[in-house]
Amino acid sequence: MTTTDTAVGARRTAAQQPPPIAGGRRLLPMLTLGNAAMYLVYLGIGQVLLPAQIELLDPEGKVGSLGLVSGIAAVFATLFNPLAGLLSDRSRRRNPWILGGGLAAFGALALLGQVRTILLVTIAWCLVQAAMNVYQSALTAIVPDRVPAERRGLASAMVGIGTPIGSVVGVTLATRYVPDSVGTGYLVTGAVIALIAVLFTVLVREAKLPPVEAVPLRRQLLTFAATLRVADFRWAFIGRFLMMLGFFAVSLFQFYILQDHIDLPDGMDAAGAQAVLAPVDAVATLAATALGGWLSDRLGRRKPFVAVSCVLAAVTMAVPVVMPDWTGILLFTVLAGISFGCFMAVDTALVTLVLPSADDAARDLGVLNIANAGPQIIAPFVASLVVGAAGYDALYLAGALIILAGALAVAPIRTVR
Image (cartoon, rainbow, N blue to C red):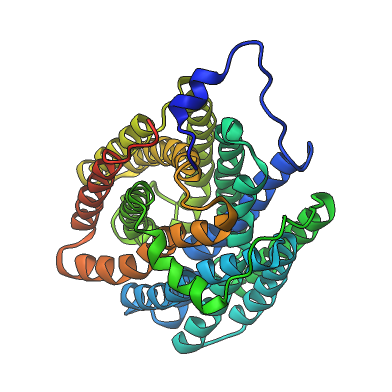
């Protein structure tokens, strides 16, 4: 990508129409729906059903077991995302990978609901992560494939809108099956991702991407490391990695935090609290995503939005420490939704403007998605140790420091304002 946001903004006038988005009117709404289905699985399972299942199997060691299961499964996410992106680049198609990933996730989730030991839960959750990252790598490559640079703020916002929608539907749906019907919850969630994958491939037709020079698979694998040699892409990677690390360290244990740390109103349990918090988070995230993406396009600026979002997220981590009650967790949820929604909308647009190679977009985004999946490897182990040694307050403070470091990482990026 050689055109910067500054140059793009300078060339656009009121008389110019934005270039068309390849894929027609269905593409952006289906990107929203596709991303919503992905987060329905990630958050409905990861924040509700998986912790509930592990608590049933290992009530005394639930924190350590959840950290272990999540960390090992995240290794599979880290490996499969760039590999699947590379393979979809080689095939010059995205839809078959979206369809295959969605259907495979259904089968893996059905298996997860039937297992009865921590070891088998780990294996099944690894399979779910592998399938979902095949789906995710192809889905995220569609924006740079088909959306012009001038409209990527809008496209990124449409993708980002799917996050709160999927989160609230996933968490609300999952809480209906806790604690007595966890297996059914897995089946229902799997059916949703499979259905959306089928709908996407039927409604969003794709032409095969233009052929590129064939490169041996071994050489392409070696280029993963070379991708990070591009300075702006490397700093974008670091910023995303740190934001996600701080976020996942806390969000992974939200179910147990609500059980063991937050003073909930009488008659409300952790699952009920999550059912209330999910729509609150969704509204805040949705508003910030839409506004952040639109404003960053209008102003032709990305870096300030990303940095401010990280700072706000870090400050927000102090709220449950000062106010470990229902009011405090509600305030935390609103502020976290605002900061995370704005960050994801604008950072996604920023990343597409610093990709090292337009012809290898899925591969490069797969490398970037290590910044999403990698923290999920580190966060469970680190968070388990922090909680075991110093409690949940220390976990919030550690998350804040990590996210602040992410705010500093965007400063060296030169080709995007």
